[in-house]
Image (cartoon, rainbow, N blue to C red; front, side):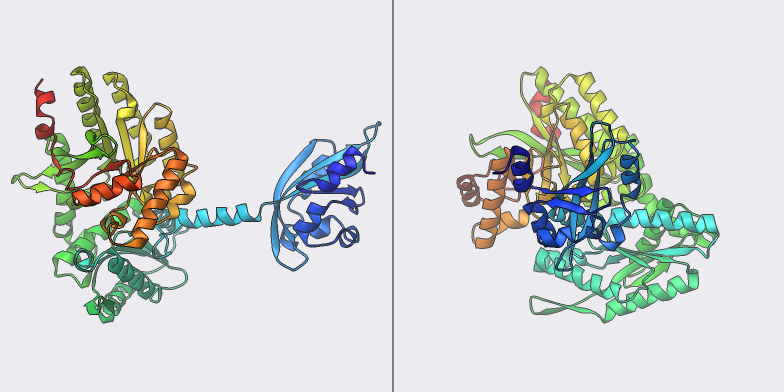
Length: 554
């Protein structure tokens, strides 16, 4: 009959082994046999060291030396074992010593936990953090890191420099509008594959967002960079995409900027200016940024937009619109999403798509996000003084998420206005959350601890975000509009929406359906368990001065 220790050792759910001081197995349990694939007799014929993958044999050699020397009581290490069938198994190894009454080491006790699935998940998460979900290329975050590293290396070692190509597909929005987002996604994947076939192994290719791609060309001069850009333009021109039985020509505008001792931010801005020039010159071509020769001409376009944004900030030309969010349980509106507009000198009203890209590229997006926060807090405070509760949803740029100044502005605004922080709901897109997971986690954790709430926008568009639900404290899931548009007729869309609702309920979160177009869809969504609805049927975006005229005037 087994004693308590023997019984616990034999039937422990994790692998356990007793090893002598000559590194030979004395006893092993059933779990260790399952983890390694060896029988107990086979293990006892091997040494403890032999279990490790050849690459990890000495991974914990220093810890073992410290343990045997009495400097540490135990140690833990993650390493790879070689399974009996030949494949690798990741384990969490915990090692301690058994000493006699005199304090002399007699045996080693090892605990082995199989963490292969966890390591595989971590690998997938790392892939999502650094890669674009759609094309599997590097994303903007990883591209900027690579460019920063490349420019520092070029400056430090005086290498032959390099260049950046920014590529923007021509008339891509028309493809999405006419054939749908699925067709647009297919086109982006086609372009990604074509670009991948045009670059060297040492080059870096990324999808930076939307229909924009970036390429880093290390160790090239202006002539070589122009050859690559020209080849890409011509290759895409020969490319056609089949969309809904239509042949769609593919063309692109490419901006080229040399390193020339610039920082990575300056290089991206220069390439962006050149790309914009290529578009203004008729598209389907490339342009090289040459700051010394004709800077006034080349700077006029995008810098004019950047200056207009800065002027809008200082001359109160930014305007806020809001769109109602309907509570489907009580059929009342108490929440609104704030939407930004820019009033030009001529009186035209520009949507976010017309200026936020430039604001992100030229560093004014943080000021815009801070301005929106301050306006939102002031509006909520005005309602609170009038005895009314108001909850506002604010969109935050991925570029601002990791900036400590934004958190400082939010905290100061909340303290000065004395409002309920729960009235502020910050919306982050999947792209922003996944592309900046560490920043997003810090940002959401800090502000949620102060009472603010968060919504994950475009939820379901990539499904990579499912991995992050337990790491980011979102309160709302705003379901991607593509699933809502087809909810009434498409079984797949219905199943996806119902699945998201089930996940949200299980996690204690609320769901918001966007792009709600009619009453029938509203009723269907209510029956499916959706909590809130937003869209043109619920209410069109209107200026806040009109929507809240009574409260503001009071």
